[in-house]
Image 1 (cartoon, one colour):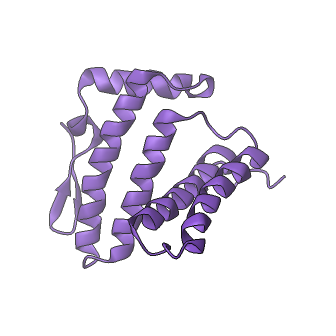
Image 2: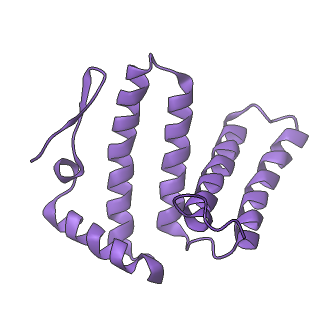
Length: 148
């Protein structure tokens, strides 16, 4: 099924080894339709990719000596993929800012109530990170966009 990438001592399978032919076709169709919004089958394939990505990130974490930053990045990436499957793209920078601010306000509520170090605070902080990543994906383009 093609070459496999090596990450430390762990072998990471290529995308064709993770997805079925039907899922690959759905992924291709979803990419073609991405400008028009998401459809449920595409969201399911994206979720499977997130799971495969989680395994790859764990392998990368192992290769980095288990650095905790890789685990946090993986959690934020999984949160991002879940959000992509549930919500339309950020349409404008103002919309993106409002989404990030909403998540930040939810974190702030926990901080104000002296619960800024618990599991709920972790969840909210990961959502802030994920929405920052979503902003980059939806609004900044591959090289940072036009800067306008």
